[in-house]
Length: 193
Image (cartoon, rainbow, N blue to C red; front, side, top):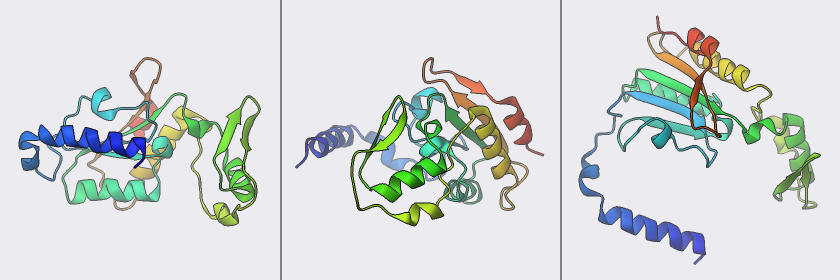
């Protein structure tokens, strides 16, 4: 058994011992909102948004991007579980700003091993065994944070299955201060009507 597995199972054991009445929580989120944000380990949506278990849906992916799957989850969150407000939250110092689609495609074509980053950019340490399947994926990299938040809110707002009465907010989380900074033009385009 790996050390990580042991740590996770031990933490789960402690958590389950003090689970209390959490088994009685309802499926719909009590505060009726959802957050789409990045998978970055430095972000803790429960803490930066003041959430307890059962409060809100949190959808995470690389960059917190409005991918087809993220939008699918938001639509289910609204249609079946009653959320009425959505937050799109990207963050400063995001790894998705460190490469482009072409860099990712090149890296994966060369090797499926973990790449490394130095002052000149990403490079492969592995060799062989690459794949050209990466050509068929839009990696949704980020060139400009405010623009990416705006694009994602606009993409969600313009989706034909997203009702106009849902308010969508656009924010950037600052990893150095823990503050949420509004992207006003994103929130404006995300206005409910």
